[in-house]
Image 1 (cartoon, one colour):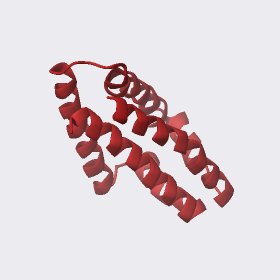
Image 2 (cartoon, helix red, strand yellow):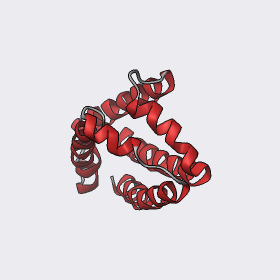
Image 3 (cartoon, rainbow, N blue to C red):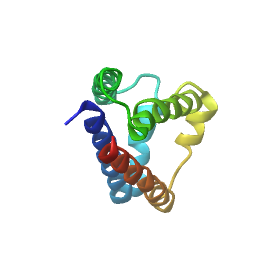
Image 4 (tube, rainbow, N blue to C red):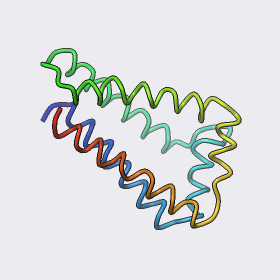
Length: 131
């Protein structure tokens, strides 16, 4: 399996797993989200997950650079990461964005967030399949 496919499947699995956590924990998920995005320092587990994703992404970029490219690999390796960079700028590096994420509260709000994320998991899984 190529790193591009692995990266896509890993991202799809990550979205499903975090969506399940959101659905199961409901409003309690807010503490996890606040710790990861709104705190002064990022928790150790957040740093480990982020570093792992970056390393796998870099392996996917290397694989992308040295293999035939498909439309799906372009989306997984180029388009989606650009979108994530924009999201990161709006959420992680922007106090108003952090406040918006931090203000999500209540079980129903987190259930909705969990459900709204699931199409992204399906999309990434499909892209990985075609990559």
